[in-house]
Amino acid sequence: MQTHDGQQHDAIVRTALERIVAALAEAQQELDELDAVADDGNHGTNILAGATAAQAAAATAPDGTALAAAAEAWAAQEGGANSLWGAMGTAAAAALDRGPIALVDAALHALESSTDAHIGDKSIVDTLAPALGDAHVHLERGEAGADAAAHAAGVAEEAAVETAAFEDRFDASTPDLGYPDPGATSSAVILAAIADVIAEL
Image (cartoon, rainbow, N blue to C red):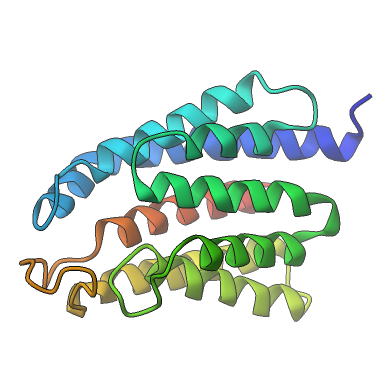
């Protein structure tokens, strides 16, 4: 039988995914346009598809498995960012019972283990690594989860904007200097949606 904690986790995951899908749908055109500067112009479409698949999987997942099911479905969608979000979700699901610090650390480790990008390479890592690291610091200080999440979302938003000044390590010939990285930008959108849900708990 599912525990009360498991019920709460499932409810939070489903609500968060609902907010994430709505936020990404609103940002889809902007994200696709950012991606079109130097790539295929489909990042917004792909990341929305990933989150939508995750939402559907979470909605029908067996008791206590919403996050794990969502992560698996997210990872199966096209695009490197979807693979990374799936990996982070899988790691976070495995750490749920160990508390929020363990969850954040697991997600960060999964991110770092799943890509060879580093901060400054103009990628999703430029947003997620500092935001998750910031969340760890605030949680370790004993601050409320809502405060840590809100602060991390702010760090993510600032970091995403700052990627406009970065050259793409993976293709320095591309014309995206002066434009924020689409993956970093979508990650800030996702973290903001998650922070909004945590603030309501």
